[in-house]
Length: 436
Image (cartoon, rainbow, N blue to C red):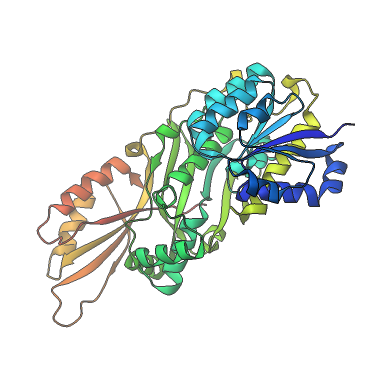
């Protein structure tokens, strides 16, 4: 059979990796897909650089729309990124009857509902394995491998930059700013790392996983998002003393009244496998009612790890290229007319445990006043750690771990504790998850 013809929009880190993997493994891929898959056309503003990365038989153009307009192109791979021109090009490719593969988690988390509906109406596929956790096939696992299960919850380290920073802070005892600068020097963090360190990138990915796990539309605007910029080395040290590690987690959980969708620094018991995922690696834990707990681990970014996911989507589309659209795996795992309108819970209604660090005056009665506030609001204490003051010090750190409580109730308690004259600095509050 004639090879499937692919057009690349952008040949940066992932695009060049995709070309290299397809070229190097062409024979293996043909055996799996049933026919060849060839990159026939590449669009990139830097045409000279693009030509240096591909073979002579590949047409290189500056205009991405020339790829979409080419009737010989069967699949368009969008690797530009962002919400702007990428959205327009993806929708134009779909309108032209092209299948689409993308690594653009931001685009799908914000505009996925519109894009998937356009693809369904046109009878084409959108592959997005590379959009979440790089080379880890978590989308395929959720959409196909765990189909028999009622997914209860997902918790993932899905941003390598922040995991690298937290790993370095823990192992070297350094503060956030110092490690961020080192991450940028080593290439783990962008010059503008805002999307990573503020949790936005992880929230894009968690949004996509929650939609597939629970059969709801993508709803990034409903996610609760916190980053790691306010974390201090002291909090990581205290967590360690209490038997926990701090990780930036994307969490999606099914509750009776709705779905939790949140990203924030989280204390995880050090004995959990996910707590021991270090450096820039990613990991996702999925809890299903039939299978129990499963863990997916690997490289969440990089040229060829991400290209691995892009090529896997190309193979899937090639296999199903001529199939009846109604017999293909739905984009969000559930049939489009069976998506639920289950609400995303406001963070105030989420129930979780907490870590609190208070800087308090080193005098009698301080702990009693704080525990009284917690007790009056029905918040029970799991553990207390008080740093012994050095000679001459008039203040100390007080660490409290709580049992589960409603977020809104904890916010009331924090406001009352912060108002105490013996609390000398802003209270640090982090959530704690047992993940069991």
